[in-house]
Image (cartoon, rainbow, N blue to C red; front, top):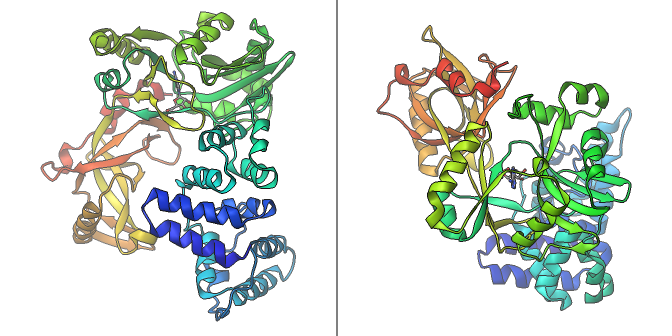
Length: 512
Ligand code: AMP
């Protein structure tokens, strides 16, 4: 396939907001593609490189190479040349890389050059493309869209399914079934602002504890256990105690979904960082396991004794789970018929928070497991924490935010009236807010060093965040998780901002 064709479709897809038009464009593109093009076409469409990072940035690209007048490159040529550039090493490699990049750019038209710049600097990411690409692929191959979607969900990769479909036609979909030993993308939850909202949307449901651990999918086939993360990485070797627990369960062949979490002796969760650090550490697993043991807490069963349960309602999948997994290894839950059980559901949330967990996930009892999706049948409810903090500095933005002061440095008050920086955020700002804060912060600027503008600590901003984590980088020893701006509080003076002391008191879980 010609590279120019892909570039043109990519531009047209980005330019239209009509889903049906995107699907038609991608359908045509797949019809014109060979199976061999797929491993390049799909990542390029999403703005990703199949090679991962190649270290080709603006410096190498910005050579002022005049574009070719006619397109001649194929997608496979481009991929092969990029692989070659990525593999240049040793003395003189920088000059050689520059020469090869120059050669590639000289063969590219102006549109192709622009696409390459975006691709190589990571600026053409099109995150939401996969769902439309699935529909386009169905259209191109004549396979039913629902079957393609299920195959992609089970293969955990659009690319694998696209290749098989283009090479063999719709019959290839048979191969993509739920198989013990092959991980599938986990189902994800959407957010609801309250238990009442969730009960109103879902009807009969289970209200489950939301544990702040690491998502795991556990596959057992006889004596073999494999453990996968949410991103499908195999972490079996890091979690021997989870393997032992899986081997003690009654079933011989199953796939279970759950969370691993480090609990203290009283059964309360240790900090998220301890769990994450434990799950992340590959070296000296035995010592790590002794210091921070983790427990599995399961909440779903995807396959049991060779039977694929994905399409069954949650109530039936949970019955299978309960048959296999003893209660202490299952997530705590309460059942609700609907909004009439609001009081009980809220009490369950309050108790869950009291036990040190982060919230609840409320799940429709009649819904199938929709792997890889933020399904509307799982709704998470977490109390939102907010703080009034002071802007200490701001960083000039990039890309769409060039010329705007964007990333805010946030501080809480110390007892002596000074401020301790707690973290940064560029999230939650509207365009109007960005424009306003740029003006305002410029007025308060006291120093500009590189891209950081330090300001007089006078502006109070309300920040929502999901929790605290320990940090050696920040002076209070903690930083905010998922901080985002809610609004500016011009009605507040910096002396009224929240203090480090009250913040730490509200989060006993991060105390050393
Ligand atoms: P979030 O990461 O905030 O989108 O929340 C979704 C994550 O919560 C899932 O990916 C799981 O790792 C985690 N989680 C904790 N408890 C549950 C539960 N009972 N059901 C589903 N997910 C849960």
